Length: 305
Image 1 (cartoon, helix red, strand yellow):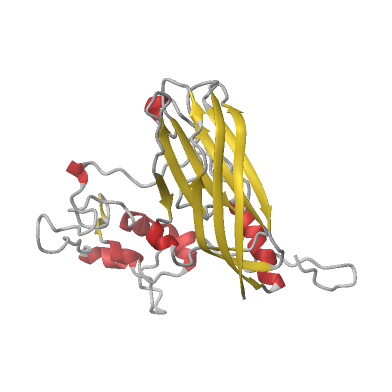
Image 2 (spheres, rainbow, N blue to C red):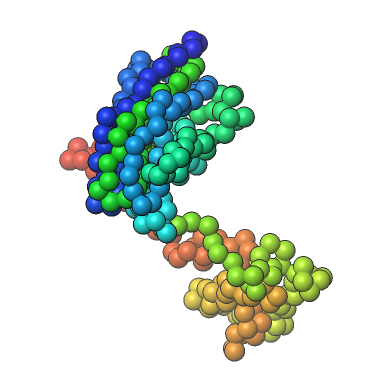
């Protein structure tokens, strides 16, 4: 196990933003292959004050990843019409991310703060590990349409703890990181809860007290549901379709203050517990006697599919 220290720079004399006010500056750093790399520290330093003339301020996303950054279709600042932000800091593709800005075009010019992930406290300890033998330092620029950013210069310091990796782990790790790095161009996750609907989201009966009500199976419906155990032909025999009708009712979704199950016009109350401990043939349909079917070669040997 050894400590690898990297000092590098990312700088451009002039970068012209596109019609959407978006620009990308990227640098690749090659590492030794067949290694497991653990990030110990990452630090960025602003070496110059960029020149930018625009009605709206300039923002810079500084990102360190093991694969090139795939920017998203999500907005960086909707009110300023700045789109195409980089991956979320919580994405598995991100080893380090910092947002620098706003840079204003009118005097007095400013040196804005760095807002980073992991923060300085967490980043002072080992954080993320990766196998890919490359590092990409990327600056995503957000500003006004077709404006020019001059004198862009940042220095980066990275300390990596490296150790030789098992070839199987290394190969699988690189494949997985490459797959994850394909990126998500649009994400919308986490559910929205109306305050008026928040009742029962975690504890169903906290507003009403007590326990959730339950349903009782009708007495003469027991013969309609339970499977016959006796060998006597006089006992009522049931069809699979009839049993599945009970299961369908037992799975019916209900409000937070209503008993599980459902009311069937013919069978009466059907509680949710009738679906417990049933064989798969009743729950998901008939089970084939052999799945997949056997295939044989001309000599009679079974072919492995």
